[in-house]
Image (cartoon, rainbow, N blue to C red):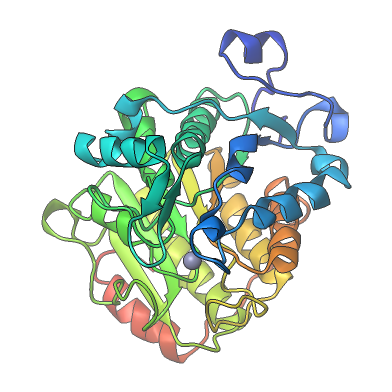
Length: 369
Ligand SMILES: [Zn+2]
């Protein structure tokens, strides 16, 4: 990986304002990738206002305790900076940003029945978006070929003027827009493998042809969007790929859709940046949904994406979204980081017959599959 991209350390990181610990390092002394995090992610706690809320600081504690026990798998832990409000406003209305800021300042409150702002939530959300921006800047400057944002609150449900689904700001949409406006990216491919449809991200780019958004998600659950026939609109028609799957879906279907629908379309799109909305709530142990992926399923999806990107010398950045069973989440993140760093090539699977063919009939109108 470092042979493909210059791994710039110390002086270069400092010059670009990155705070990178080089204690962790992969083979040859180079970090496997940059792992963005910040302690404020542990201070945003919806459970204080909604007891039993699943989006808890324990999620990050489980991930970081597993990672630190394995020397961060060679990834370099990197402090996420705060996003500027102007960066949030690449995607969100100024009124929405101000509403979240004011709610936090006044001690917090409920946005809806499951989305909460607490005293420290604005800081955590600024860092989550800021980590995504810093990751994209590092990826586009060839400082690293891989990045991961282990941050919360998650982002992919947040709409332009509305927080929802545990999400305050849409971190991955902000990062993608920043890559295009500031970092010279011409086309960004976003793959959302969270079990819920990323309605916020889809909405941000549904009329755009410079962002290809592809999502695999469980049908008929929150937020209720993301039908197969929704392919974007206007100049963005065809640049939205929604692949709903039934409850109970297993790895064979998900991997078939990745290999035979998502990546062939991405190949024709020719992105210069790949971002993953990496939710882990399609895991069989997850309490919020009914899919049946295993820890290794996420690793295999990550391998497919990494192989795709590395063949084209395009960087890959992943951002944590959902995943609500802390032990399964931690193991799935570790498996994903190992795969993104390049453990072994992905294994090809035969196309699953029914849903892959149905998806191909829709998506094949826009992309050579
Ligand atoms: Zn989710």
